[in-house]
Amino acid sequence: MPELEGAVAWLNSAPLNRESLRGKVVLVNFWTYSCINSLRELPYIRSWAAKYKDAGLIVIGVHAPEFGFEKERANVENAVRELNVTFSVPIDSDHRIWQAFSNDYWPANYFIDAKGRIRYHHFGEGEYDKSEHVIQELLRENGATGLNASTVRLSADGAEAPPSVHVRSPETYVGYAKAERFASPGRLAQDSTKSYSLPVKPSLNQWGFGGLWKVGAESAVLQEGPGKIAFRFHSRDVHMVLAPPKGGQSVRFKVRLGGASPGDDHGVDSNADGAGEIRQPRMYQLIRQKGPIRARTFEIEFLDSGVQAFSFTFG
Image (cartoon, rainbow, N blue to C red; front, side, top):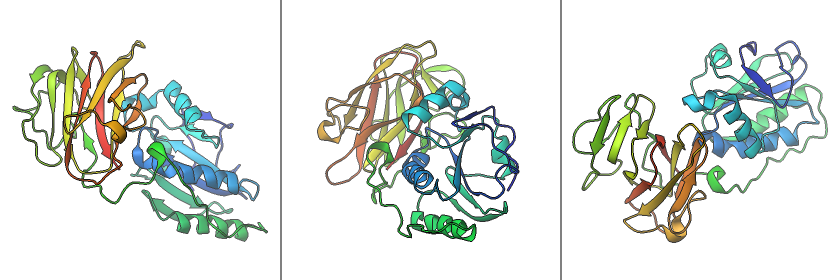
């Protein structure tokens, strides 16, 4: 197990290190709070931390940011509180712990025995039963008795609910550094303001802007309201990572699905009319379809300027 050095702060505990963890079974989970894959795994991490705490399991949730706003301590503290994370969270804003583990994934789990050896790892979502059996095995090796051999059964909702089997749309970035399948007329203008129009008949997984936007490497910023983004998708859920302008003002938005208000297909962050507000930088669930899944066009209109759009994810 590498040393746990370089975090800018620790939440929910004093700083931990390799030596102080000797004799304990440790689960090191790499996550970041706006990542849909991390959020869908989180109910299991929370459940394991609670179920096996008295048996000697230590869970460390290394918060390693993907986007710039996830490096800010206040944002991480707010997310940890809202997500009910009570285990230790080192804020790894400089990716020092990430690099020590040579990690490349969100989420990623490393299972460490009482002698400090990494005995198993798993990258991405899934295989929760296998992971929990590994925890049980390492705890028994360390002398734990009376363990409940069953595995946790969860029924998560909102953004933490498992993905559907209908996802045919990939994670898509808005900033030009990783943008793909952009379909508005003309190319993305890098680091300069440009007026865009929505694509007329986008193919599956194509997207585009409407309005006056400035596209940076990581995100696009709406220069004056209103402004739109449209995406032709195939999945149950539509999420976007969004942030309000710095300074505290919120941004109002309205979502449409197939040209109409979403109704019962709205997400947790929009209502049946499609309306909602962006008040903090995070992932927003905008659509959760209740009926048959097919290719449809999603459109979000931002009524106020300054919104930052980072990425789309689906479920």
